[in-house]
Amino acid sequence: MLKIGMVLTLETLENEMVERFKCKIADISGDKIYIDYPISLNTNRTAYLVNSIHLNVIFTTEENIAYQFQTQVIGKIKKNIPLIILQLPSQDEFKKIQRRQFVRVNTALDISLYFPSLNLRFTTITEDISAGGCAVLIQKNIKPLPLETGEAVLVLTMQSGEYHYIKTPMKLIRIWEESSKSIASLEFIDLQEKEKQLIFRFCFEKQLEFRKKGILNK
Image (tube, rainbow, N blue to C red; front, top):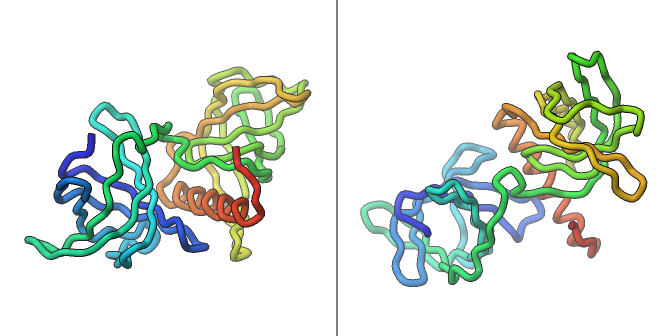
């Protein structure tokens, strides 16, 4: 399933501020994966991963199926280039994931929606969010049609106190009823990489916050 040359996304599991990196598989031998030194998606610089650090690894197969597994850095070696050695778990520990739902958290964010073809604009709050889209509460008398496109503007509040406004085209996927609430599922369209990383960062910060509080994010 894993192959030499495959691109991996690494996510730190131990720090308060989750960091994400990109790297390539240089070699695979037994229960070890050899990767080149990763590039931080935050700074675009080469990162140095200390031994024993625990990581979440995400990769996509040639069939465009995404998986994740957890590992740790077990050493470093210099072959043709310096390499980092990761522990390779058995394939039984690989978990299939939806690519646009790598990280999804249940949280209430202010969001403004605009459907130009319907001349409809309203503000509401999210039920959950990921870098691929979000679910929002809508009034029962507001019924945009599935696949209707528009624009979303949402506000991310980081742990640092920073505010980030994300403005993106979106598409309504479906509307359903749950516990007397009317909920719409939205897919973000052509989200810029910088904005995508901000949402990833927000979601990871929320996950850590939930873990510290003992809250299970479903």
